[in-house]
Length: 366
Ligand SMILES: *Cc1c(COP(=O)(O)O)cnc(C)c1O
Image 1: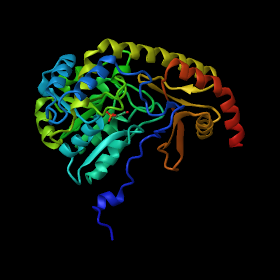
Image 2: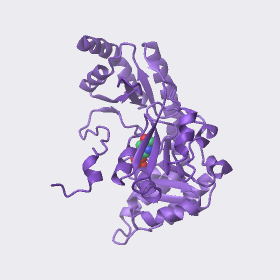
Image 3: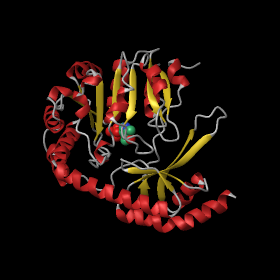
Image 4: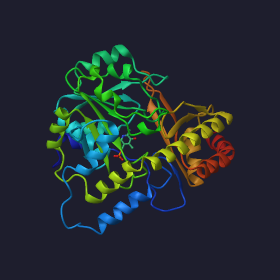
């Protein structure tokens, strides 16, 4: 006998990437920022900790919303802070998709969307991406008619593919919302600042989500925010916990946003390192997918991706090995490696061991 709801019994649960708790790893598997957060963030955390932790935080995170609104050129009523952008994804699923209705997302991308829908007993439709990591327009047009929420990471993971506004209009559900998950939005050559929110083609049914975990170096502080027309934010606010963000993370996130120069300097370093890594890997025979994010997706002509991952791990370098059904009816799979852009020293270490790693991987596989 199970005491769980059937939907919970049926689901597997989301498995996050490996998070080793010992030191000495070159950790390039979950797209964290290799650089520390702004010193102003540390100051803000210290000041908050020395302040009044005995009282509840501001339930609306007013100071944060004011700062974020100015940066994204909207009124504060357009901003909903959350305990990590994953919490906003939960709030969105609970707000807009009833049991029995369905959400959609491009596949491969971020499979958490699927777990959130399963908790809610919603259906899930995968919009399959082809070998160019693009969707079929006719299929998208068909899905728009019935889906309540369409989630799209832009840029996408694991490839760093960036879709244009014109392409994204193809995914707006007729009776639902389009969610642009901009976790990696700051790493694009031309970073977005919420321009699409005012684009009439999205009819105020667009939600943009942002996180502090990647570009602001704050994955250890759980903080993210959604930006949408107040008609959507007002309803979503009813779904969140009253005190979903704690005083320390509100202060940290506000200070991080206020120090744009710090984020921008790290962003520039990461983009430069991304180019250097891509060139070096291509020189070693890897096929490197062009990326607008802080990671790159690579495949090797030997196809020994799992063995390369394992050989790197033996040398205490963690990258992400990924394997997906490739969409063919015969059940075949495609796989590859997603490598987060680390510091130059970390990337040099990867490049130094790779010739040996590839030789060993090939020996292991045969
Ligand atoms: C990292 C990531 C998130 C998670 O953001 P948090 O603020 O850490 O919860 C959301 N979406 C995508 C696509 C991500 O890669």
